[in-house]
Image 1: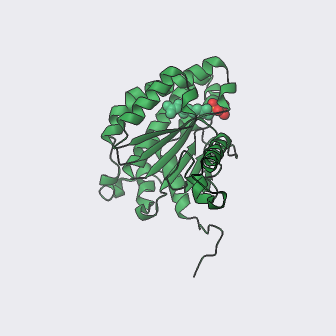
Image 2: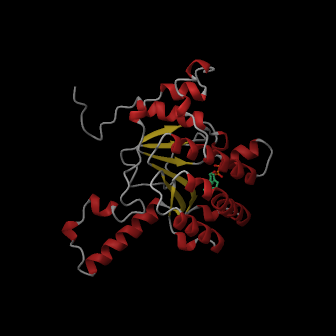
Image 3: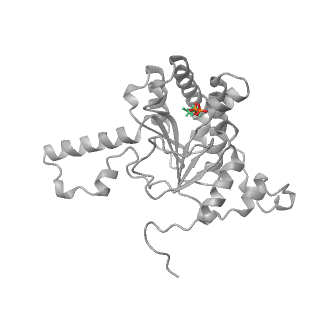
Length: 266
Ligand code: FPP
């Protein structure tokens, strides 16, 4: 089972070391105001590795460790939805060796972690054009989805061969086909209908988007779903990202005033 932090909340309060210790940050957290859906662009693996004089693959491998930390804490805090950007529709432009490393890591991660993820009631929900993934990756992804389909805890969306524009195009095509087949009328199309044709259908939009590694862009991630999402950026590279960073993001999120285009009532 994943390490438990919450059980020790008050017992360990006095043992906190420094304002940024995991325990201290945890103590400050308001558990009733956590984001329901957290989205993360896991960026910076390559630069992190190059800075250390290592191959980019080392950055990706270390990035998997960071992902593990994040999933653990999301389970611990009972976050309902986590969406991570693991491979974009544009990532095929990378050298073949790097693509192979990423696919191998995905397969390794899913086969190694599936038991523990299931033991923690995590439901793996791959999103993207999965049919275009290499066979081994596709099989691992389908197997993980099938194994975890009845789990009722964290919904873990793993974006693979995912692009926000491709997702919208696919949704519009499906809607158009329904209109052609007289299953839907043009005047019935609204935001709800569109959202119901996205990979994230039935899930709430992300409350918080985290992007590490100092870049400030969306990179074709969840273009529709991020309309009113709070963004949290950090210079920390993804391989260095850990539970403390996630807790800092949550604390900052809790200080935000979300208006969704309206006004705050006094
Ligand atoms: C961006 O860093 C990261 C990726 C393209 C891949 C993210 C993948 C992982 C963290 C590991 C595999 C995923 C799973 C689900 C097991 P970058 O390479 O673009 O970094 P750079 O901007 O520094 O070059």
